[in-house]
Length: 428
Ligand code: CMP
Image (cartoon, rainbow, N blue to C red; front, side, top):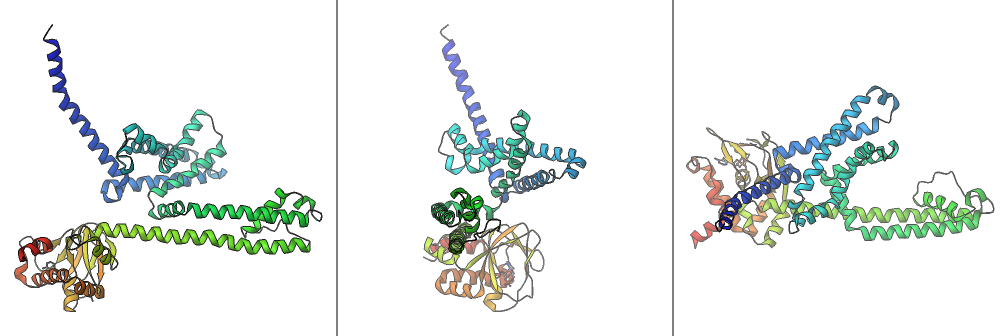
């Protein structure tokens, strides 16, 4: 009798590490699934997954459009049904997987899992994902008719926003300027009301069927202010024509305003995004990441990003040289006599021809998908003048590369020289 509680406690203690391991295992798996779904473009499997989802979105939207053509619907009925079924199954699995990994999203990480998932369910991305699958289940339950169903199905197109940085930037631009855009809308509504009232007063006797009431005149005002002008309702009195002229002029101004606001905001969002991307790439290059933030920001103005696919030639032996390259991610092979020299993340190349003002000394090819930061010749000169220790490292590496003794066993010439802080400590 007395031994039962200690036994139970022992069993519980033994079970604890197992439970912990199980929880850690599922957390790791959740993190991996999150990385695949959300950081897919940096991962080969994630990239394939993203492409499959994008293809499914495009095919299912095309199917939903073509199914409205009676001749095609009659002929390819089964095909359309199969596409729809496959898309819904895939999108449903994606929805559930995203819900599961919602806890890993940086903004929700501090929340309790149920709260994080609830917050995710009401996010714009999750609502669009839900709209992509909802019509199928609503139809299955018999609560929706076909035309409404088709409209909802076509909204799947919005799912592409997740995979298109351009669409995301546009959404960000609208979001950040929502107050100004809302003011424009209010102004437009006010203007439409004023011109409709004037028009109704000017035209209601001459054309009671078209301008008899303010709501009738409102239709004309909106079509005129938006500069569409169908021409199905036109003023015939002198006063009416004067009101119409003024309305048309205000219409042009009203359209230019939100377009201008949106264009400026869009450009700013793209600039901000490029800044963040370049910053994270610069931070991977040891030559730069020891610098204070202000210096990194200064250097970033001169660096452009470039991607190279596996096997692509980045510089070719004998070509004229205009820039040097820093490897942010990936790997390149320098085709020197004998074994090619491999250079990885944080290394640089293309400096010899710039320093010697000569042609390229070797061909450099990307071994895997590589992201590079490109520094033009003139900017490199400016950088060396402003940051002499960076210039010293670049020159030292170039000298070692030129002299054949400098080639290490594994060809990894630059790794020591790139450790700027060590160099400075040595020198002290
Ligand atoms: P550049 O001559 O401008 O273009 C080819 C680049 O390959 C060269 O600059 C160097 O950056 C790089 N390179 C040439 N030889 C070697 C080497 N032996 N080891 C590492 N990199 C090299």
